[in-house]
Length: 430
Image (cartoon, rainbow, N blue to C red; front, side, top):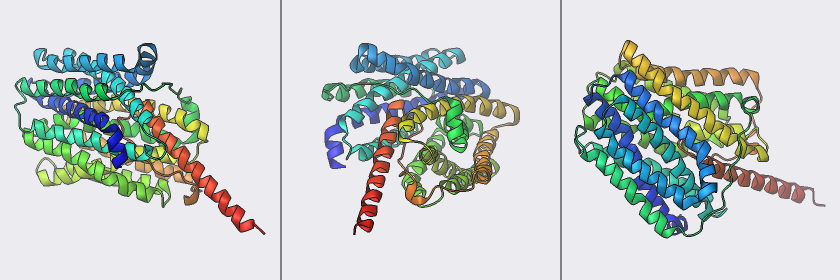
């Protein structure tokens, strides 16, 4: 771990500041939208727009990098993010915010692709898993730190929009001044969706449902908070609880994942997340403590499910198909993320704020029910000794980071096969 920090500290510092900036603008717009009298349905378009841009950036950023290089893409996209953040309070219109979110989503996706390719280039086979873990902690830590900043500021002014703009601008200094080697870049074409669904229907459907849940947490939770009358500080705490619980639960769930039928764990996590969301819907408006408990259960189950679904799918994939599958899952998850805020915003406008948690209840519950159904269609579980090890990956990962995780899976599986062959050779040796 010390070696990873020693070689990539500048990259981690820059990404921390970027995540603070991204975490600020996600929650801040939800709060400022209420001050501007935007409806929940109008805000759903704003929040969904980020994932439209993010999905587009995942597709086109690699081509931009190949044409003009990492450094130019990194600097250009960062400058654009900084400019859009300043323009939000200047143009408080739904259409302007929606276009701004598309642009910011595209730029952040491209920035992640660039930074994560540098991270992959700096890591070795021995340190890649540790680098991925530190990177996840940095991402979650940046989002949580952003909530602390919001709770101390005035959402109706300009200052809270200036802070993320400055942070994003400063984030590029340590990265560009310290990262010397420019890695070679090549992207993997995704598997055809029909092949991916055939290989693992549960992982494919789960990724779509999870996209809706995650996008709701990332943006619409602030809209929900303002609708039920929470203070700015309470909204900040609510968002922080979701991400802190996700970080804390990631590794215990990974430990369980490597020691039991992963389908049972997927079903259990879907059920627990649905119960948490239902508690928040039923009691959250009247009890802030119950709201925190429900939100914590949703965060602790929904975020680690992303890594769990990838690990489960990899149990049924050949080595050469894993990287292509990761790109396909990013697309499926992105489509779900685009649809999630729109459906939730429509529901909140139709039946009230509690529709936020009720729709998350439905999404998590549907994952649990579908998991049970798939267990009847594929009754034989993968033996524990044949499963690929769980590797934590964030739902906001770019195609590069997803492929890094797949490289870790492949290395671990090849090591398992080598150890099994060595054991067999020793046992059969006369």
